[in-house]
Image (tube, rainbow, N blue to C red; front, side):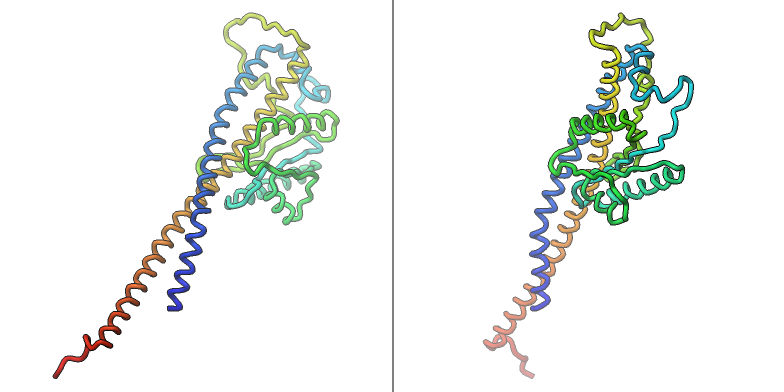
Amino acid sequence: MENLERVQARLDRIRAIQPVLAALRTISLASWRMALRQRTLIQPYLTHVARAAACVPPRVLEEAELRGDRVDPGEEPPQPDRLAVLVLGSERGLCGRYNTVAVERAEQYLDQEVHAGTEVELLARGSKITRILKRRDHVLTWAGNLSLTKLPPFQLALDLTREWFARYEAREVDGLHLIYNDYRGMGHYEPQVLQVIPAPALRQAHDPPEEAEPAVIVETAPVSLSRRLIEQWTAARLHEALISSAAAEHSTRYQLMDGASRNAERIMDELTLVVQNARQQAITREMQELAAGAGLIGQRPS
């Protein structure tokens, strides 16, 4: 009887948890699909920005590039001496080693840069990955949170881009790199290092038109327009990384919650069968005792 009570209590606990697992699985699935839809919309925008930049004379884009005066024509850009590294993680848990994988890649990258003599400034986005970095005794110069209910919006990427460009132009940092988990399929991701600033040459991102096109009429200052294109290009690439990271997080959480839900259903079926068999045996014993007490069951005469 005592064993049956323990089994019944365990069954009741799993039944109480099952709706929570199902809800988390549904939310993760919806967020995952939404992230994939948003990611498909970013690439066409990048293509449009690159095509617009292809219509701008290369000389104008060169003048618009941030801190272009630091590099002499024909020379390779210098390696950054002061590098800001932003590690992107998650705001919620229940996603396996998602944050730990990003931290391990960040540690590897930091060792590489420090060994090369680069002064590194470490930043983090996401409360879970911030806790892991602090537990590992990393000093963070800045840490921020992500939304619990929404995917990272483009405005977030644009605000970060403008803030970092301002620091870059003020010569507070020589570059900014982003470390994040790139989505590679359901439950699969790979940590990546993305160079955000200096922005890769926009004029090389899209081949110039093969056929002659009418001259583009620009009513604003060409350099200001080019700077705007560089800003939008960088923000869109950053937003693509944020969305890809979110897709990896939610797909991993969905896979884990789906597996947990299936295991809970299997255990409930097993425990239900145990309870039913125990009750049937108890009923059978009770009926035998009643029958024996009424004299319906006894020893046969010799």
